[in-house]
Length: 333
Image 1 (cartoon, rainbow, N blue to C red):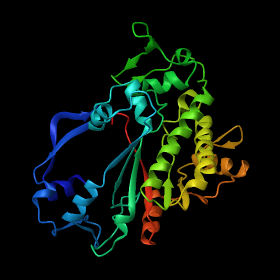
Image 2: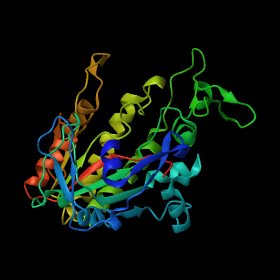
Image 3: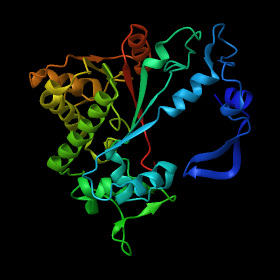
Image 4: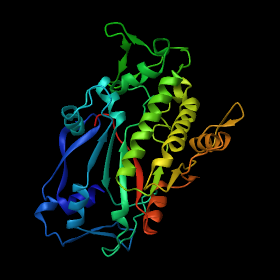
């Protein structure tokens, strides 16, 4: 991707600078606006014979489609905050926590499948214009300073789990980013009611945003349900279960009001199977259990698939449907 951007737009990293921690700053020497709108840009590799083709005009239109939806009832959610946060300048703690209730959406083509195979496309094909990228921030239980409020809000016994900085009365930070568990620390205890309430609020916001954007098929995946689900402190199984329960409840309660959304697909590929107390521990199984054992009653049909999200989304778009795809966003903004 860097080689493509360098060749097409003069992309280069700025040495020693970061947009946010861990993300290198960059600049481009040849803006798309400086090019002929009809010029065809080809995204390809040495191993592909059929590139993904797009015009400069298409790229500009995709950029201009960007919209932001936010929960205005969240304390501190105003335009000043959003303008700053969307430039990657949200502060750790309360502001980072607030970003869970912000959804960013734009029309966005998919250039590659999950295994990095380039998807071929000629400019006459219209399916890329049917794809909406839905960028959301999940709940982070990995134990990082920027999302400290996730730990302090939802893990009721966090002082028993992590080493504490006595000056700040917060988890002690190592390597400028991560928290460290105490030796022989207790397992985490969740405020399940608060967590479920916020997960429902997050799911309701992003589905409502998709409805406003005239999405017909919503493709979701397990945002925050892998390494960020809190496996190291023993809460991951509960987090996955509550996440599935949250969106099931939203679909049952709000489904009758949707005019555009016709179906929801959960793309939950199984990368490995592990068991705990005789029960499978993966996101796919958590969602299957939730929607079957609860006897899902929503009017919106649901498909739970062990499949690549990109492949599913492209297939749906090629069949003429407006479709959305989940994208994990960082709480920095």
